[in-house]
Length: 355
Image (cartoon, rainbow, N blue to C red):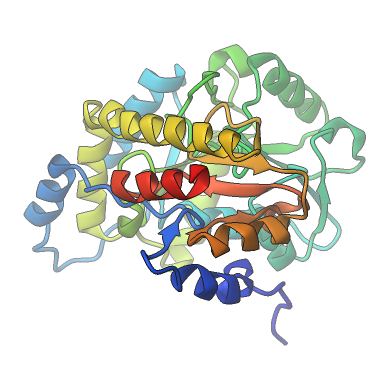
């Protein structure tokens, strides 16, 4: 018997995408959020130099990889003595983690009220009950909590105080808290904070995990590299399972990730590209009558004109602009607008919005 899952969201967008692509001057795709800027040279060189790779990689990852990632975590979050495990991108970890933690039909997984759909998919694969709410403390008999800060799609950021409240509540109930922090480097109006930050957890990582990715930070979505870090006991358990399942990050990709996490210079360069595109798109959207909610960090603008999300998505498509309807994430009157288009295409979108 196969697992029954919802229709893949992006497949439902196909007719609207086709309409957007009919524009005489071409489509501006601000929907999926796939990076378009060049992968940093330091990463490309590391990949090429590691291309002669006849042997199997290890599931635990190269020692140099663990060092690079945990040292970056220490620089960025202040966390120390963390368990570390590389993943094949972050999405597979999001989708697989409830199963890896032993979550099942008798368990409840709490996810953000407006959220990346794979959190619910992962819980469904494990057979668990899903509750979508930001008031996590209101739910009884919880086994696992997903946090996402900066949030996808909203760009909202959880404060140190709010994160601390959730961690304290969860610890009293032996609940695992997992924070998806893939947009941690992209703070605009509020600085994102990791659940691994000692200000949040008092230096105690028990029952805490954080998921990270190089896809947006370093324009490496095609490399499929991420990692999970936190409670060493839980990470060791996950490692044992993944060894049996053959879930190994390819060796050359591990070498590329070492280069990416060892080099801090390319990150502000990429962030500045997104910052400029964000400013231009936000001004144009507001000129066109849209309100921007949250969006203080992350890779997206969370926009509304008060109309139904699908109606708004079609409105953009008529102008040759493809966006993601809030319905994908549990919201019926917003659209998600990505910053991942070239400067030239962003300028085209701006001209269509204000023209």
